[in-house]
Image (cartoon, rainbow, N blue to C red; front, side, top):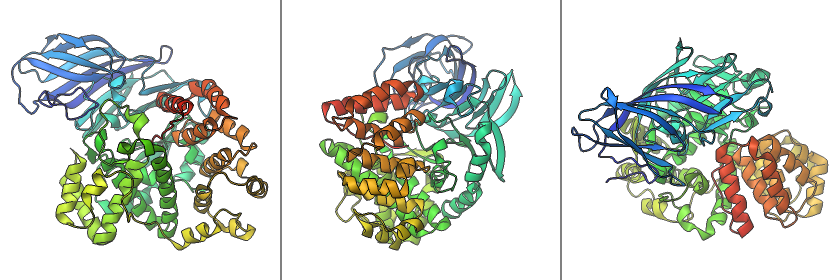
Length: 592
């Protein structure tokens, strides 16, 4: 049996899903989807025409019926693997080119969060949203849940009256008592996305609508008004946008990531609404994914850097043309600091600091880190600095055109660049080596130098007054705990950092303050942990609380108090980290 993806039961000699027709009814009381998935198939690598098996990935699905070729088909649901879920093996009749599966999801589905009205911004209606990355689509439908398989889809989603449903697809109008959608391009399963809640939309560009709960719509529309500029800039760099619409959806506070690049419907955390547009470069990151990740996709999570490293590189190229290279370098410096923190955490697991991973038997949510994003970015930046920026961007556009709507391994990506830019870097060391290679690109700019010159001291009032949010983030990221108590108290008194309205500044400040034993930061951290579910905030704050004997019990108490508000992915990640912290071996996970 050929299993190219360590997180999928798929055998690549079996038929491949090429189109999904999906109908689902959302039962908010039971927290389940009652659904039917019809999978249209094409022959696999062996071109099988005789009866044989089809293996699909599932997790906690109750299978009620399976038909193929107009008749019931034999099927077997295998035992549950703690990482992969259960294999659904269907015996197909000869020449069958489709299979129809009736099923129901579990209230424990790791892809779905069913928010009560109290867990939403407006507090009036329930809210449902999905998060299928990394390997959670299988808990929403039986599918070949691997980025190596791409399929188109049409769907009908039935939700209670008063709610609006959205998906990562074009609206196909009402029908069958629900909302209908069609995605004509092929996507991997992790990009299948849905949301349903009391939502309103507002046009913010010729191909973009922002959706949000009514109380947040005006603020969201103002914050993200620059989306068309970002799209146009990305097209100048990377080629035509292939997805038609680029709508945005602001999710409830429990959303575990900063954003998710779902085609035609980018998911965003409400923590980006800072009131000054200082955090909207996350939107540039998700837009860049339309090319690097959605158009050209990593073949498995062992090659995740192909999605994320290319996207961080493209993001910085987009923002450099919009806000300037100096401010972009400040943001790159914060990313470099996050990477170096993760490398320190992973010192005992150096295999997880490689770009080319081997995650067999490992939960990818727990194992992920900034390595794929920031080390991947530095790899590509090193090639660009060696070969010349213009030449590298030309090769990047050729790469995106050559692998358009395909899934590729890291080795295939490296071979493409090595052939066209031979000798630019030590490709093998970057791909397979641990840590950062000697001579990795240095992030530099006059603004960055000026902030770093302040060092571990307090900035002068006139200097701090002129700092942007990016400069504050670089300064706070550079504070090395333990920071003297007098410095922390002085900073807090003068600049009211514990009460900062900017979530990124607050995250960095509270992390440094907690790690330095600054007690006034503790109640602010507890309050923040109770109102956000973004992993970028949860992980460092829980780590800092759990890392001190004085607050370790408080960290566990907070998690038990708030875990019901968090997404299942966040519960898994934070639960694992707190367990590791108790054993003294905490390690990182990818920020959102």
